[in-house]
Length: 175
Image (cartoon, rainbow, N blue to C red; front, side, top):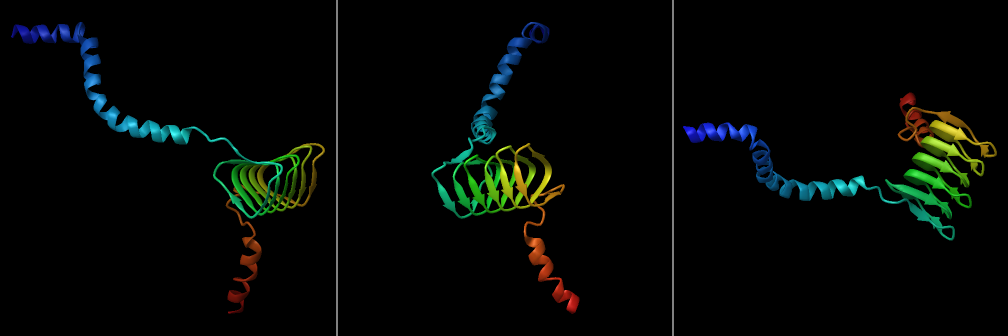
């Protein structure tokens, strides 16, 4: 009985930090070994953002580009580009549709631009329509085309309106 009361009395008052320190060490190594090995490795990799892909000025690409990351175009691209953040450099030319959450145009784009945030800097030259949620056009930017605001420009009709309206509607309307 004395040992029980002595263990109970000093345990919570005096030995609580020591017992608390020992208890988590005993309990934590098992979960830490199992979960820490998997979780931090998995969590660290997605949390650390990879650097933007850079297409240098001497690079000419003919074809579409698609990434979930960021891309910086300094060369010439003939094709559609889809990315998270798309930056068109001052000396770059893109002939195709540009689709990204954020689009920054410093160079030349010939084609449609779709983005949640679209920014045309003073050195930008855009020939095509811009579909956006928010837009900023700096003084000095050259722009030929129309501007349309949409709540979700990325999932909007990207060229499907013309085909979708022309083909399916006449057939059902005639029938």
